[in-house]
Length: 248
Image (cartoon, rainbow, N blue to C red; front, side, top):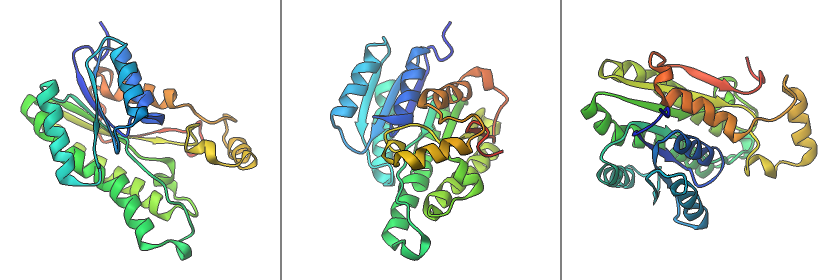
């Protein structure tokens, strides 16, 4: 029996990177996957094809995660297409890094809206299905900088710290209905985003990590799998760092 056999998950921002790794990991354990991204592009089509090839039901949806009305529309469509939602992974996120003295209001608002408001949007819209079936797992992607902060990332850090507070509150609010809520705080993960960092800066990052390497999206996905499955049936309101002891 596969860990997520017969379950349906929504994974936001899953056309690439950590979100895609989570979607593929879930599918490998028998989970049907509805995933979203801002645009229906070649990345979305490729991800959908990979998921379908694994023998599960899968579909990509174009969605502006920062807009509640659009989110509600997409979640309602997913519930209709898949007959419910068992797992929600709030992964959609962006960065607009700069020192506070140079940060514009637009840079602040964009990061808060995509990273933090999207978590509110999808959780509020998806909870109806979970409440109806008296069970579900909500997994929110935070970050180690949401725990410890980081210079030049006040907007990103604030959004990720907000996700932690939201996660713990929802765990208390929905726990009596069989719905769990947890957060994952990745550290330096090797993705397309971190691939843009200059080589010398990347090596400096890796040297500062006790395990002396960056993590992989697949290593984050395995923790998400644990939280999505019944292996974590009594785990809720927690923040699990996936950082190679970078922050303890």
